[in-house]
Every structure is written in structure tokens, then in C-alpha cells.
Image (cartoon, rainbow, N blue to C red):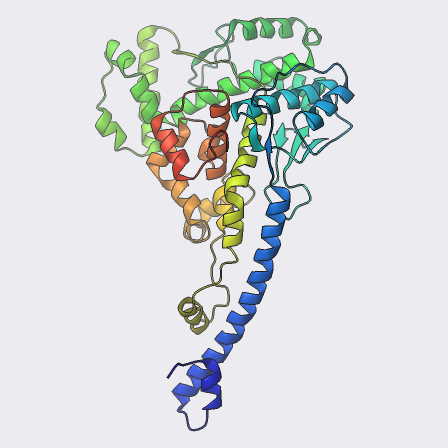
Length: 439
């Protein structure tokens, strides 16, 4: 006989207490599962409709020639007509719209015109630390929009940031090693970062007269000084094993030997401490700070990064978003009800990918209650705690180590710029189903 809650209810008379209890569970389960199916079907249908309406791939020209607009109106028209951006704020300055369009053209050309373009370009204040951003919530009216922070197109904001980096005025420097000519903080170990000659001249011009640089030049200088800082710090903190391997011949040439296999067995923290000791020895033997060459970074790299997020959303967000409404099996639901649980899963599927240590509350939960963090965000927990994964992500940037989504966006940006992607980085990128150029 096929058992069902309906049959059990009809034959309730004469059942034992245990059987009646089972019937009660079955009845409750039937109600919960039925309600869950209705809610799930409604929500899944709603989400599918939203994704179909909001994620549309464009087929632009395989190669678009970018030429700076001479007026804001011309720039807005280029964004709408050539790049097929749905809407554009009218408040853009000429410098800002040219910046956005140039970055979008670079991403489009890297994809040969096949990509998810922003639905709208926003030009608003977004605080002091973010140049651009996107929203991942498909139910938000801002989903698919690319937001540009107008504060980074103002002399005041850029002067303040450059003064801090270059140690000008009463500000304490955070980047005194940004060029050979800059003073070195004796209390802290730093590499000497060799910048492009063009940037060195810009630093000299800025120090003589900040007003001699345009907003675009200041943003270019800020982007490259920030990049120098990230590379400087990441060599020791982010990917110490890779740094050791890349500089092994230099160490050995100067009589500093280390067993790479033994080094690899250490924790990231211990590797970092050991590497700092080795570079300190190297500095003493060389008689000066070790030097590293910093490749030039286009200031539009932030557009490449944010467009990486949008392509990642287009490829993966729908599946993960709908997964949270997945209907449980009868067996799992039955066991949940017996255990007094009505929530079939505590796993935050979407947050596993697009949240991380830079998001509010995540770092605190990760540090103070790792078991709860692991339960809610198992994929992210594995990403953050796996030493090999963190070393691979750290070879890209410190920011790539903070979440799966940021790792994807950082690598995507490098792909857009035609930078060589290491095999282990590409393997990790593919593991997380990162978007490839051209869709």
C-alpha cells in the first residue's frame, strides 16, 4: 500500500500513539512541503522573469575605435548608440564620461563585442574609497547599473589622496617607497618600487605644483601609486611562496639559502615572517633596499574589474539565486520537521560567491565564530582557509584573496588587459566558473 498523509488521516482510528505521532508529523510535513512548493515556484518564476528581462547580452562591433568626446552630450550619445548602454546620467563631466566610455570600449574589444553591458551609467558620490561599483541583487532597481564616483573626478579628493601617498604636508605617508627618489620609512621594511618614467615626472610636477596636473593625470597617478602599494605589500603578505620562488636565484646569488619544500609546509603567516627575514638579510648584503619594477596600470582598470562582476553575474547569479529556493527532497524535509526545523537550509548560496572579508559583518563572523561562518558560507570558508587557494589568489592581488567574487573580477580585469594569467590562477578561475572573454 502506498503511504500518504491523506491515507493516514483517514485511517487514524485505532492507531497507536506512535503511529498517531507519525501521522501528525506527516500532516505537518505535507502542509510545509505544499506551502514550500507554492512559495518556491512563485519565487523561482519571479526570479527567472527578472533575469530574462535584466541580463541581455549585446553584440557590438568586434573592434570599436575610441576617440575622446569633445562635449558631454557627445560622450553620452556614444555610450548609448555605440556601446548600447541603456541610460546615462546627464550630470557626467566630460572627463568622467570619457573615462567610462574608454574603459567600456576596452572591455568590449577584449570580448569582440559579445558581453553584458551596463543597463545604466550612474554618476554620483559614493564616499571616499570607491571609484566605481555595481549591485548584485537582481531585485534591486539598480541591478546591472555601473556607478561612477564623482568624487574621484574632483581635484580636492585626488589632491588629498596623492598628498597622503607622497607624504606631502603634515600627512603621514603611506607610500614612501613609491619611487626611487622617495624617502624610505626606517621603522618598516619596504621595497623600492620603480615606476614608469612618465609617472616619475608626474610626481615631480605634482610636488612642484599640484595644479599643473589635470584631473585625468592625477587619477592616473593615484591608480599607479595604489597599485605600487598593493604589489609592495602583497609580495610579503599575499603570496610569500610565489615571491620566494620568483626571487630564489637572487637569494642564492647572495648566499641566502632556503629549502623551498620546507618553506611550503609553513602557514602563510610563518612564510611571511620567514620571507621578511630573508629580504632583510638581502638588504644588508646589497647595502640598499631590494627593488621591484611596477608595471604601468591603466586607470580604467576599475572599469575592467566592475565589468568582470557584471559578466560573472550574467553567467552565475541566476543559478545561485534560484538555488536558495530549491525544494528539499521528501526525506530531507521529513527529517527537518522531526528535528523541529522549518528552514531547509542555512547556506547562503549567493553570499558564498559575492560577499567576503571586506563586507560588513563578514570578517567579524569569520574571526569570532568560524564554525557558524563555515555552516552559512561553506564555499567562501574553504576559499578563505585553504592555504594553497589563498596563495594563488594572493599572486593576483590582496583584494583577490577577500572573496571568490573579487578573485573572479580581478582575474577578469587582467584578461581584458591582455596580461598573462598563470596556470594555477586560471585553473582556480575555471573551478569557480569565471566568465571567459567573448561570453
